[in-house]
Image 1: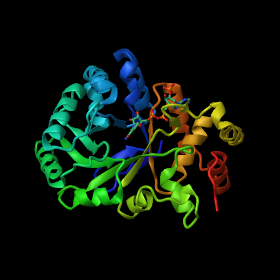
Image 2: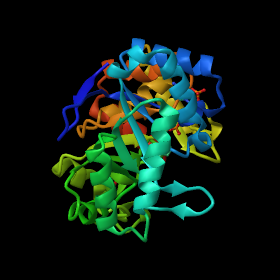
Image 3: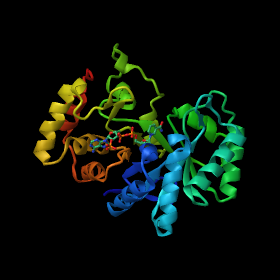
Image 4: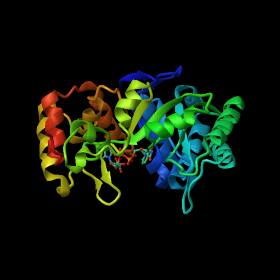
Length: 306
Ligand SMILES: NC(=O)c1ccc[n+]([C@@H]2O[C@H](COP(=O)([O-])OP(=O)(O)OC[C@H]3O[C@@H](n4cnc5c(N)ncnc54)[C@H](OP(=O)(O)O)[C@@H]3O)[C@@H](O)[C@H]2O)c1
């Protein structure tokens, strides 16, 4: 396992984190085994959101944690708020504070290390967000704050009023979904891949020491599921297979290594519910893809290069 010092925090975190979105339909015994496995493999970072399984993911995790209070000091717990299913997005003071209080109750903990705003709210009043963050910090309920799926300008607008620096931006990134990389590579070209859809968020986060976390590292989309062994991604799977054979590892390991190879030192949020699959994701820490391998994978996902 690799560990990263999170910029502007006192936290040292595993580069592979466990994303807990998909544990919602597991039993508490299964969640207990998965979390124990993750800890044994060196994972110390657990990613949640109030909406995963309608709160069930946090609840199951909290029940497992209640059986093992000794786990807590080894864990960095991150949760998110502000998506309201059926209504959309809510950055209001009341929603943020209520959501955190409910998450803490479900998680059986008195604080989380990190709170993220899950997706931008067009009606965001940054002064109101600042008031919520200040109160949560003062109450000892949240140590650090971040965002997910935010542009640089949205972060700067928040930071104009926040006392607390935004330390994380969690973004979708995989070989198949590489929007944050595409426009930089295709700069000044006429095709759609050259379009800057996110305000240069990758370079901006690097310039400003905002840690990037990658979500859905082997998932193509909700509709397609994972791209691993998916006939729709035939050329990519052949290339993954060839490179995986070279290193004697699985295709999932190579897909994870593709993310870790980026010099932004991205933290990968692994969404697996299987201990064996998690091991494969973590094996990526031992592999440094060559430039040629990295670009071969990029192009095998049918991306153009000038
Ligand atoms: N910020 C956001 O907007 C946002 C959005 C979505 C997700 N997230 C976060 O990101 C985390 C990861 O998202 P995700 O679950 O979509 O990502 P993922 O890691 O790409 O996992 C997607 C699917 O791939 C399978 N898989 C994972 N590793 C595998 C392996 N080594 N071999 C074979 N299959 C494998 C998993 O099934 P198995 O369980 O069978 O392994 C899982 O169903 C979530 O848990 C959540 O914490 C954030």
